[in-house]
Length: 400
Image (cartoon, rainbow, N blue to C red; front, side, top):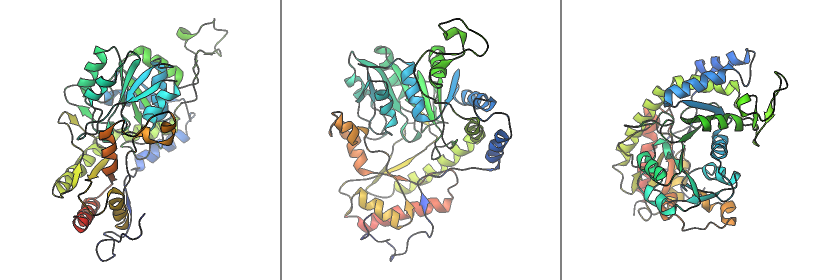
């Protein structure tokens, strides 16, 4: 942080206590759900998993749901289930957490980065089509910030080229694409995350939804070491009720019943979570539309969005300070923002693999300007006002 940038109002921050970009909401029902499991016979691989998966199927409209340990494991499981391996290419967006791309590397495949739409920050279908080769096996799209990806266009491209569409919905549980259905039932396979900063949390946790029975069966296999007790998948004759076989190679990606119980309880509140987040977004949009030099993520009208992140852009050249300076000024006002995300291929690990700056110009420009502001269910209207007033003060003070 630049200590030379003071709070604007005579050195007095706009608020006394800090407000962070995200925070989980836990109520008595959540606590009871967890303690009920702790008093039960099962702490893992028990009935709470089944109940959570049933709720997820009902919310998404998907035929199948498989819980797993986190959103990263969900992506890895899906790549294994789809047979992605050495020599395969998978198209991914650069504005995302590294797991959306790392899952391809875990399987020996090659991530191919396609640029994003400069207004929505979502994977641009035109850029996707430009990147398709004979080695392309799948497309991973990310519902950045919670907004649904351009699913009809991406599905058309995937059907045209016989590719699988994987929807990384870590941000978008509860989002509905109008005319197609809820996120989780539209793409060939969808992954979710229940990290504490997400709309719904289990502390950690992930899930996979699909309408494909083969993908579902493989997901169950790969979430548990590649080990099965299902006679359908065994190669040998069963030697007794204790018998199991390892038919693939994976890791322990199972979810606990403790996590599943918390997620189930949180899913019951998803309509309220979504509605409040939408209220906050409307207040933010109205306030920031009046501040020159500040732009916000554009939403497509087809997406009924359960917003996870609220991102503003500090337009380059509009102020005497850049994005980093604006970020520091917000911190001085006790507004603790974040940045989501550094384009994946700019990380040192990817640079060592041969990726280089300039690959996705729109993504890189967005990154240089973006700041993630506080957005969570328990924010009060007063909290929202503090955030918008802080942005306005800083913008007015440093405007050229």
